[in-house]
Image (cartoon, rainbow, N blue to C red; front, side, top):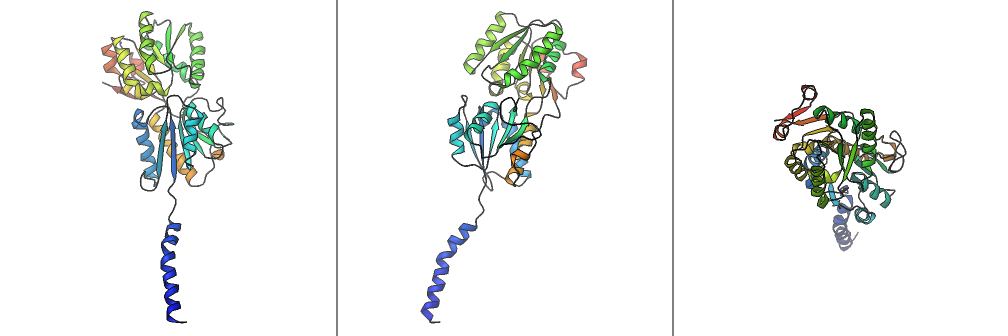
Length: 323
């Protein structure tokens, strides 16, 4: 072989090598995150998500990317914007984002979190066999709404009626409301619904409860009420109004009592689902998980501030007491 032919071959290899190396670089997985509220609304929950991903070998900015999208008015166009990025998996927090994501794609895996009734919402076929491209965790255990009512009645024995703060635009409200209505009938209690569809309606909701001499309120599960937790806590304290929530985040912000599944725990489980899907598991074959442990959180500092005495029987059941 002539010398100049050898030089041509070597030169060709040098030119081709960068392309070959680039082609062998592993693709960095992309996670899409879709919610009604910004990530700053639930920092503890997302920290648990990141911690579990890191435990499983995924670190954002190194070997995994995350694109965040949120909008108080969730619709298909918001989800479509995320789907257009072609993520490997979408994490959807709450029912409206999960429904919007499912409407926008039937192929990209979706891991739902904070969903009250995924079957009723048409997201899955069943808990054990989801089918389709959606799996994840549910937010509500059976009769949880009724248990919230029972706890409030223990704290305020002569309460009647019971006020309910809810967002009627969230499909999850109806499921929890149904449990509370059944429990209220059995206890002979009346229920008064007070609606807040956005942040600008929360002040008016508490003003109405004050005018109508409310003695206690149950706040129906709703991302808006987590995002506005400090504001809600402040209004409840000014009205000296006992409040019972589903999420501990509301009590940590100054609410009185919460009883329900841990949101950080559910986001930790979400990371486990994401890990399985990135490693080849199909959403249709991953059973949806229900809450297995509910936690009772009591804020004694707030109880004293609003003049409420927590019965020893309730305190004895608490998983955490804030003093």
